[in-house]
Image (cartoon, rainbow, N blue to C red; front, top):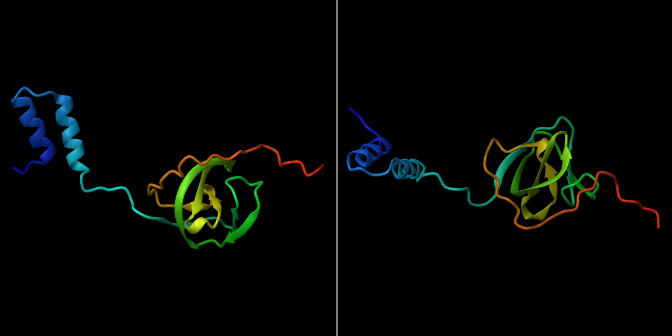
Length: 132
């Protein structure tokens, strides 16, 4: 009969009077020892029907710096929360600091994208006033 490392660890802990919680933690850690956080940018694809706007900051009110055509493969550096776009508050910063795109327009294939550090952005519900 074949057994897994997790099952053997659990059995050994129970037979030696060890704590179940410790055995479970060890089994989980061992089961995921070969899974590492991605290093470097995360590849994604633009899934919008129209060209996706790339902004200077994670808000629709910031300057438009580019557009990404549907099907374009992009490299994501990190993610942060910003203005809600069609139900999503997540924005991705493109690698190389080339701007921000809403997660509504991009599919990262459920891959983990690192957070963008401590940068905060002011997101308003109305465009800034241009009157002096």
